[in-house]
Length: 228
Length: 129
Image (cartoon, rainbow over all chains, first blue to last red; front, side, top):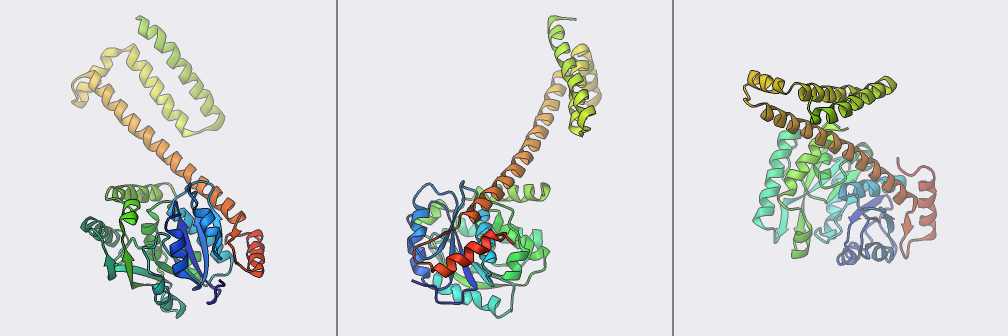
């Protein structure tokens, strides 16, 4: 299985204890682009499974967090000459058939960044608590950086090379999603929201963020601003 | 002086002296702050009635309440300080983990030899942009 599409397109997948879902995700992406999987210090077979696919595999010796893993993957993709970098969840929430649609505004030069939006697209099996949490995050984002978005914590994004070089994710854990938006606003990068599908399952919901994490994320963002 | 004062005052005086010595060596303001804490403790232990007078001046009432509030504020400040230290340390740790991951990039089954070489050269040349 050889990547058959433009070699300058890289997909970065951060994975932590994803041995149950990673193989399905990698198979579903197929030959769309070069892929780098960042195993974020998993204690299961995530690394072994990733190595059985024609992808690059990076391994954090300890669990650093999704934000840290994404930045590691982005650094690697940039060092390989990536022109566009897609961030894609390892747990199968995203639909690989939408990668091309997400890439279009960045490759055509319409925007520096394409942000996936589940509220413009389709969201399957999302509980009301998750919807409420995400709506609150949208309001928080509007208040803090002025970006008018419909979905602020969607892991499906596309960065142009310039945007990936400009944005530096310093929030190692879940606060990185808000930090990316802060940096888009700070550096006046152009962005566009693209409707995407998010599929929630019992497994992904169990592993995903809880309502309490909203407070933790806010704390991390404040800490990041204080200790630069 | 009572037994408690005989025990604590020499101890606090030693700490205050060490703090002055440390400040003279490296001129860090944290030593001045800690010196203030040790000296305040010495004064309050030597003159217990002073806390009640200061407390009534501040409208708190009892001297023990004043000491308790001061302790709470100090603890909060110390926690904040160590949270920051931990935050910065964690960030440095992430950077180390990242360098290690980039240095040991592994090609999965099926990647072409040419691609492997290209990536290896790129990482060796400095890796991260």
